Image: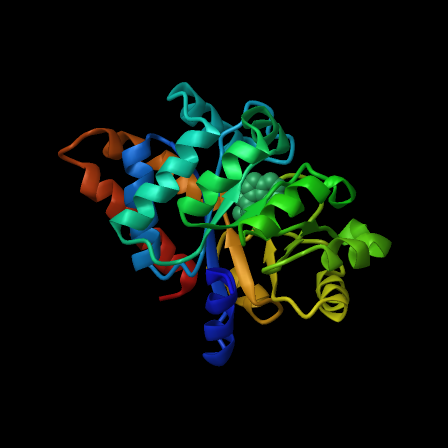
Length: 269
Ligand SMILES: O=P(O)(O)OC[C@@H](O)[C@@H](O)c1c[nH]c2ccccc12
């Protein structure tokens, strides 16, 4: 049993949808990331996707690309992000943490080095968006060794690959709501309901949806269709809007409070 499984089991009992925010670790700096994680947990996050900054985030839109650049300017590495997860758990984070990283940082640091650290640091799942599931054997081997869930992405264009993808999943399946890159949007894939039902028919695991969800209307719509909702860019954009406040000790708490208020409106509280 992994904390992700327990979390979804509890949410299912309460008939609740998981709120899963994504933030770029180290944006604008490590200590702010820790405070943001604690604030997200207080604001109702059920799991957190912790993004490893990367120089070539091909699946990301401009908001997360900029966040990666800010974190990389602080020289934040995948090892630092694992360290942040560890500090967060020590600081009181009790919800599952999912390491979100492109494949290259994993490869450079070495799976055999990272997985023991990830396990010790309380990381419960990993998402590697640019690793085709057919090439995920090594990553999944290490995941099984260390009881870390391997969470694949499935897209509306996956169609006949939905089966092979979800059968290699553990923890939950991440359904991408639209084609293209991450970022706020007005429209989603035309047959999104049909797509989510098709994924649901292929797995007993919880299915979560992400990409473009940025206001309460969209959040409520997808809460009816999935077991969890990932929100990234619009939260990262709110961090960006408050960088000025977050940089000054005298206005720091105002910056954190602005982000708290944004999350509250997003969730319709
Ligand atoms: O940013 P959005 O549009 O809210 O989508 C979630 C997304 O941020 C997060 O899950 C994510 C960040 N980078 C990614 C790359 C591929 C797939 C998903 C992601």
